[in-house]
Length: 254
Image (tube, rainbow, N blue to C red):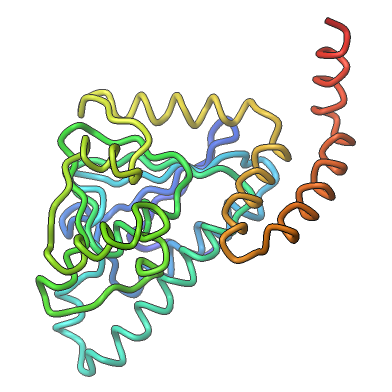
């Protein structure tokens, strides 16, 4: 099994926890950590015992994005950043395409590529003290890891542009109002709330939840007709699953 660097991976009760584990660097991504995230995502996707993925971050901050220090220390920053952005984007694309629900628990701050990680989750539980920002312009850089695609779909084009151009920092409450965050809880309740939610999702019909995630996320690049046809084929498959057969029979017998 591939050794993970900067990432902790564990499975319990159908929930795979992928923890960003570089707290001294605000869980920012250098190249080994980006590669390890991709490996962890692939493990969770391939493991039939995993029903739900929970994304967490160690320490005070969820994720500060790319590791600027590692960029500055590289002999060829342009080549290094190209590889880092491509590696991390690939991991997040696979996370977004996974046919299993993804929950994120966000504390402290989610900035830059850390915001792209958040947007790759389906349900986001935030601590009340968390902040959300794009951060790129502050160091003279531009969005990566799909943020230019993900952010306007979550908050709309003009709000996305405001965040990218002005450096505006959103509070957890504002992020919830804008559609970046699903639920806000007290900071000391974050771990318990996110863990409880992930465990609850893990008890639900896996095919139904995984395919609902796929259908909704894929709809951005499909026509209305293509989506309707996909839905029809998928629901016809869903009704043949053991979970659906049991639940449909129970409902019909009321």
